[in-house]
Image (cartoon, rainbow over the protein chains, first blue to last red):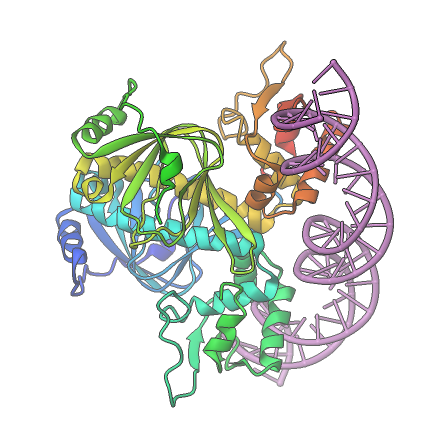
Length: 237
Length: 237
DNA sequence: CGAATAGTTGATGTATCTCAAGCAGGGTGG
DNA sequence: CCACCCTGCTTGAGATACATCAACTATTCG
């Protein structure tokens, strides 16, 4: 059973936004093939593990999580997909994960055969895959070797992509080094992404709050008071 | 400092083995571009994290591990590369991992620019990447959600690829369900791959031996007496 | 307003880590 | 050829980070 038809709902009119660089070719290629743009609400299943993988998806807007389940119900969120990322590409015939929206999203669904036929699309897909593989490497380090506090700190830093990298500009002089972020994930989803329990995630967040490093504005709206401080807790610095 | 020149040593004569399917095109493409085949001994560094990623590698024979280090020395082996796999492809300019041989290997080094220019090569690379991403998803489940015993059992099952999958044929009737495998990794490397300590890996292996599920022939030569039994300990069944 | 859902906090348990000692195999040199 | 050393592995005892279980609180939404 691929795709929740009741929620896939209104296939929104194909509205291609302006793009740049290699994106331009991709968009052109997309236009030429059988592409459908969909709007989905939050917490909606896009596909299940084991479904026939006959379509690939490009996320235009919002966030999607990919997760796997063990037979006894343990869950691991393996990837969090953001705008311009592609998901649902497989070497095999069926999806290897479940895909579920975290927020309301706009996705483009592309027929697999057509995507495979287009050279431009291949190039775009490969680029996406390379980024994802790199992210997975980083995530393996987190899951295999980091403490609970380091995992949560690393998770928070995901939302401040311009900081923490090798070319981190550091805090701007004269400004408070703060940043408001929207998690758009429940504690359970965060826990399943970080390989922790909901209670441990909660405790770490409470601790960061107590230490004044963050403030909780509204459960999943978090104000990082000190980006550098959080960054130093990731274990990577 | 890319590549240990002292060990890259003799660039062996380019010997292309017979290939099938899409592989054929790839081999032809490889022949046409600047490709160099190298033989390296076991435990040799191919590249370091941060090196300029100007070449990609195809493993012809042997095994390679990719690993990342945290500043305090914690290590995570993020991928184990086998024959026909490609590694060292990046979206960015530098390698994101260290690459080290586990066994003596034969690798083909391809100039990155040329690989990017060839459509056939792109197709091959994409296929490899898809497989690797799927493997990483599986590994994330292992690292995030499995117990030490389940991790070691899953690791052992890696060496019996025809079993444990969705189309597992089960044990052959009338034969003992056993299998001799070569780990070609030290306990430390296994531990760093599974996100455990060397002692925990050792204890789990000892326990499997005590329960008669495996026999240790020679440290890294393990006889699985009961493949089905090990498979049931992976947590995935 | 009240039920339902999501998140927090505390007390306790346990799987795995850490530290420490002993053991085994493989290679070297006397 | 055998003793010795070196390295990698195993085993034990104790510590600890995180999980589990359970109660309570906050938020959301009808």
